[in-house]
Length: 420
Image (cartoon, rainbow, N blue to C red):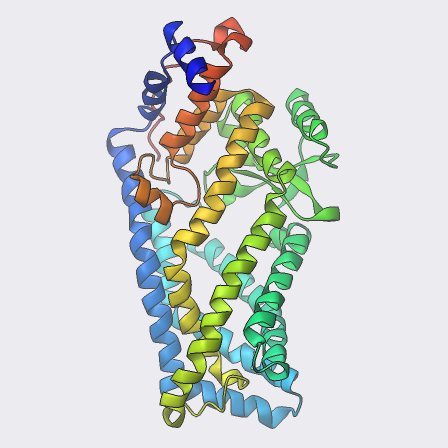
């Protein structure tokens, strides 16, 4: 049926492949080369970031810092849960400090090198300090819960540990829109107007209990366009950023919001939490199996009492870094599949294929637009721009007769203006 519809559209003058190539031509020359270089450089960042994490955590074990922090915490309390929380404070501070040069390069200098950040160093540093404070509050709580199950279930803690981390992930999804996100951006109700009414109408048509649309001032960080439906239950909210309102025409905004509404209707947040629960099971099983064997070999040097000793945390962190690197194709694909589903839903909900295709090209400012199948599976957590545009043009071909006459032709948009 789909093939027949596309063939019929082609016969009537609409060529899916020609339409796709017309959109891809919006990002070309130096802009395409810069986008590809930025995104492909991220492949190597995954590897180097993992190696640095392993090196830093090995140093904490090898030079006895981790054991000394654990001993310090045990001298100050006899309560195991409090010992873990006290240990977590110097661990988080030390690893953040040791990795700071790498963080400055990847998150500040590299972003400015590619023209993808609007933050000065002071503003960027303020955000990093805020993130560190959040880690110092949340991290000890998570670790205390994980080490509690390690002490109480020495044979099956990998199973219960995965459950604890899944529970914290769900709790974070619930609280983040209300308590965490506002630490970094302001969220204000979208101004009254036809576009707001159209977005809410789409939401209400899909039974989303939202009475407002929020706008975040993301332009203080970058010029990237974005939107999302976040939260769980009572904290659900629809948010778009001010860049989207400033840079994208109404049909593109509606297309993006249709996509985000799809995430909610298709229950992607609960599904993602469930999928990552399986990832956590693999991770914790690896921790449960590998940690005792490595401790047995290096116990004399590291002075770690066992897996219930908080001093083992650097070993856990190093193993986690390696396992998550190996699981990159799985984690990326889990997210990408949800994005593909939301793309299809959004096209049906907003019925703006050209608006969706144009926004996909804007995302090509920092995402590689065309990739090989294996490359996309391993490294892309969203479909490539080429595949997103092709999906939109195929949708347009299938629904050509339903569109207004002025929207049936192949659109040949002008190239995106160069970034400053």
